[in-house]
Length: 84
Length: 231
Image (tube, rainbow over all chains, first blue to last red; front, side, top):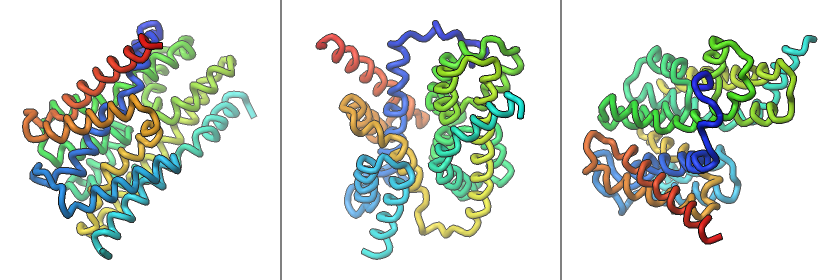
């Protein structure tokens, strides 16, 4: 793309909107993977993924650390499945 | 030590700290790809050709959900649309390069290399500055291929009941940690998530990622406009 594009083709407005691409696309993967089961039905009760995701999100907001977010989410998920 | 090599090493040095969070992505990709049923060669091939963490994991997620090729290609394209921006931003610094080198260097223009080299380009005007992007890009490349390979090896030993597919939403959640503090981003995140969840069974061809992404991006455009008008 470097080869084909000139910087002038992107004004500040388009740049600003493109900066929202991760916030616009990633939740479309995150939410169904947490709230729906394998057949696409809502799974809101007895779903350890919801609590584990909330814990991971809170750890992520506080720590701003990618690895801490993933590990806290997996650890609390396993804790809820195997221990509780 | 000649200047080109020094700039190349500087690129490696600058990008290295950003490689720590890449490790779990590579491992998770390798493990899940084997879990879904891709062969080790196909898995390694994806990392060599696509060379993009989020796009490869989205590819696996959609493929395992039975999405069509067209939907997978357009979803991966949407995730990668930010690279248009990266290309446009660094192009002014690389205008002296021959076309073939521009094509080669664009392969290495991944998130972390872009972030570090763009900072370097702004501060340094020497003619060999693009070696910084090579250094950073090759570092990302080595880490991504190595962790994919380790994931492939590990994948054979990880029991299914660990529910490692849950690592997919977690890795994307982790990529959004800086956006949870900004109100417009939070609204965009919630809209995208709700549209995808409720559209999951109704949007044809499993195109819910694209539909949710487009609606959420329009929301972002409207909200940022509203904020500006009120200032």
